[in-house]
Image (cartoon, rainbow, N blue to C red):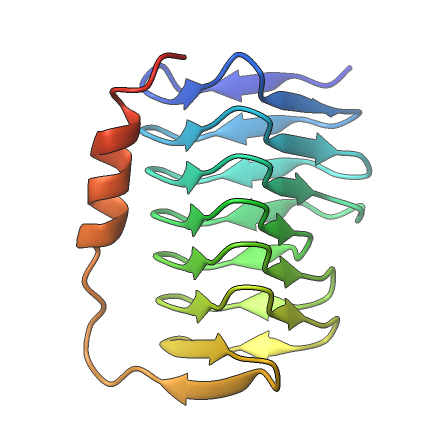
Length: 159
């Protein structure tokens, strides 16, 4: 029997759906907004600390291995994550998709509508953007103020 473990400081909106046949763990400070779906259909899911998952986002594990999403990740409206490994401090813009078999490092931005394909590896500090999925490296440390601001604003929402 699967279980859902939600840290006491995490917030999950009433209309968010967490389901599946495997365990789901949600880390401290993480916020999951209305109409999000987290589906552990074929394997467990672990979501780290201080993540923000906006409306209509989908996280689904279609593998028999554990999916691990690191800390301080920000999924904008309609983002879809199926890959098993996501590092820390990433931003997935509106309606971006990361397929099963892809790997996302840390401090990355996946642009709006970008699709990361199976087998693709996005190394640390890269931005993937545009119709042709161009890549550019970020040479300085990423400022997390956008994520922190979003988290503090979302804490005022009614759950």
